[in-house]
Amino acid sequence: MPQVIVQCDECGADIARDPSRVRRAQHHFCGRACKGRFGRRRVVVECAQCGKPHERKLSSMSVSRPFCSSACQNTFMVGEGHPKWTGGMVAVTCAQCGARLDRAQNEVEKKERHFCDNECRGRFLAEHQRAEHAPNWRGGHIIVVWCYECGWPFQRSRSLVGERNFCTRACYGSFCSHVRRDEKHPGWRGGTAPSYGPDWPLRQKEARERDGYACVICGKKRSNLKCEVAVHHIVPFRVSNDNDVGNLVCLCQHHHMQVEAGKIALPEAVMRQRLGCEEGALFEDVTFGTP
Image 1 (cartoon, rainbow, N blue to C red):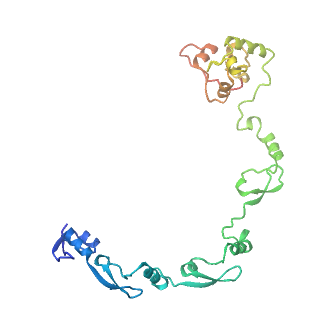
Image 2: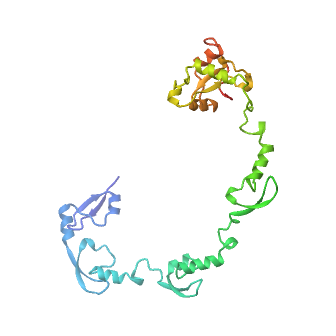
Image 3: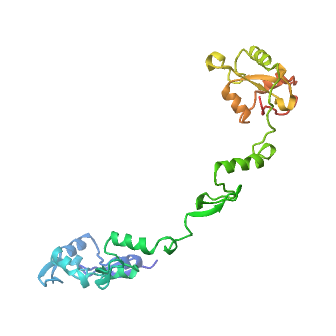
């Protein structure tokens, strides 16, 4: 990039500078010595506020208005002397009580109504911007809906309104009793057997004795669990109607719930041993269901 020739502000010597550097810098110097001498030079100027002559460094003369002190600068910057002066205070009236108020010009332009304090503002909003008169009104949070079961109208929060709404728990229970029962229920898994037969207590005892009163997954015994281990049907009783000991396995309460929920499966070795499957044979996963 071609350079630009400028003169040193102290000694007047020619200096080669990049154009970008020339645009950024206000003064140019050929060395530190010239820059130091230039910065120590002082000139006499008059204060823009009081007119008192005072000395200023030549390097600080870039400001448009020099002041002899901070007090003069603060006095000058009040009102029209401030660079962001917008016209001063404007007289307005409180929208609630009618009192006269002084507000800045930019505040008057931004706000439609003015209040002398929060109390006046609160009273105005309570009287004029309630319910459908409020600018953000969306119909209210309480609306009237009809019970899906009995058809009775009742009030409910808008956020709680769903596809089906019920006025009481009794109506919800009545709806579920004939619409969400048996195979119509989303959690239906085939139902449960009312009884495992008269030989069930004996079969439970035989299965516990065979497994040593211990869970086949974690190995915890009755003495560690402080309760009896549960007896689980490998093939659900509602499917097999079988209480044979080969279809039973002992589990602790924790693993029994995990197997029933389908979160874990019985060990493969236990499955093969109980169901009589040979090594490598395929068998259907039937670990879920009623114990």
